[in-house]
Length: 179
Image (cartoon, rainbow, N blue to C red; front, side, top):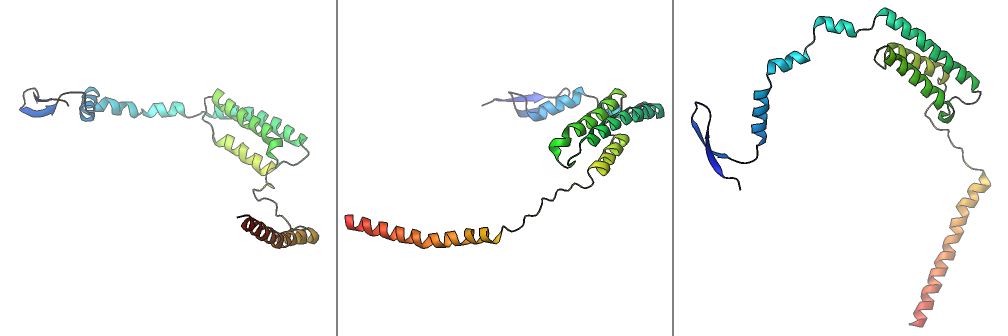
């Protein structure tokens, strides 16, 4: 167990009975507060009014991004138009869709834009409206099986139950005779 020792703050009264040993959480917090100056930490969080303007994309950058992603869109559209079958089958359309998303993201990164952004979202919505408007998450409804199959599935267990009961009774009578 850690021993108790009297400590005193510089120029202050003696504080009796504090624990000597590994630093406690309170000591670490006080040390951290003494090291860091709160005004300097706050100054790092706040930005200058001019620094926000440099992060905003310029009209030229957005025009260049729009031109680049038009090529992405055209490649995607050509690929999707070559798929003559169901556009709702993810296995068939995942590659061109992933390519479009990757192309949008790479172009945004190249120009220093965030992703997703307004133009990228616009093209993704356009994709969904153009190619996936008729796709739904609802599974196809199943119809009842033909009547003869349905009757066989109902009658077979009904006929099997008396046979199994008879078998169990017969086996239990056979075991009583042996004991």
